[in-house]
Length: 257
Length: 270
Image (cartoon, rainbow over the protein chains, first blue to last red):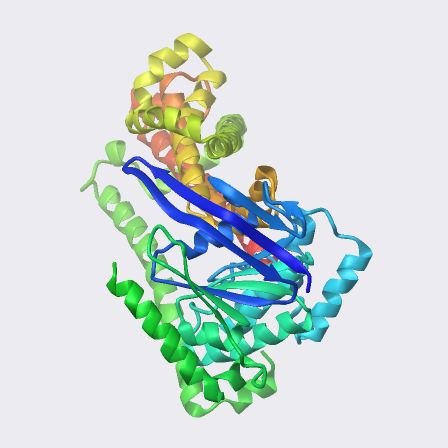
């Protein structure tokens, strides 16, 4: 299988007036093409830092990150970042919001716009395409945010707790929705979350980080092929087993703090 | 709203709508009532010499003065001079102030260097600079416009800058993650984001530029409504003073209305 991303002994230090904090220490892992990986860990351990490093928003103090054979040096077009909140621009229509990335990257070509319109149609946004975001529900807005991320055709999606701003009911539905769209478009994805059940229901593999400075504590390869979508997985027999195991490991880490 | 639709409303809803209407009428009639009441009281008190019309003028004298002034056409020169100064001060301070604010957003270093100066200039009573302005700009329109600009520009810079800085940093991060340049962040995110704030800055600046203009005319002028007010005070023609103040009110309201219309248009096009 093709490898899309590799982190090689990546460390990162934050500097502030009060001193320096080692946030990440020797993180190494790889991601296969089409794989869905989740990163969990104690709160404030530096999960988001990993995503920022991969997207090139910040530069690693040590180590190397390679996406599809190319080392990451600056913000790159191979990754698409999805935030906790949808951050749709209220003054742009849904379609204009979705084409934002293409505009920025000066890729508003006819075939790209056609691709965008296909995405809009395929994922049921056609009737809203010329509406403004305020007319959409929270779940629909997050779907638009995902389509906006997909519009620039990134190889790798970086999801930073994209469901945590939604209420519980919507969260389950949007989680399923996002998973299906990502699998449908055959994208690789890394999800950062503090919600263990969310991680289990979405991922092929889960990485657990230790407390600061974060290193990889555990790695779980989820053998749940028989249950595919997140909603099915929550009903799956093995779901309880994995939840228990991961929850206990996390508890141990948090007690060690 | 179509007629058929209205017919479908329940009695309760009709009553609710009627109440809203009644309230609106009540507010409007009270607003006019106050104006008329003041005018009537003013007229009667001065008519029966309870208040001396020489000091207080009166509505009827005001109307008479206005008619005389418009008859001689001289007043048009005064109005146009003041409006010209005010619009110039307003326009320059808004545009230059916004550009400076963008510059300060662009350079973190510059912002931190300038910050204490802005704070001090903001709290300085600009009228204190009057003699300096006259020495630098000479007597006349240039000095008046400079005074208007000085009064408007600092508040423009700080409120436009604060508006830009209040944008969610995650939105900027989102733009960056898509590979946006600083210029793209500015005109695709911060510019449209700031429009409501810019409109409120415009509204504040209207009031301030009138203050600046009249203050400037108090300092040095040979024409304009501020000049008429000073002159009227010196020769003890309170009718002239009051009429000029009244004309100022009308024009300030007109300019405010203009910005409100722009505001409506901007929000409609979104």
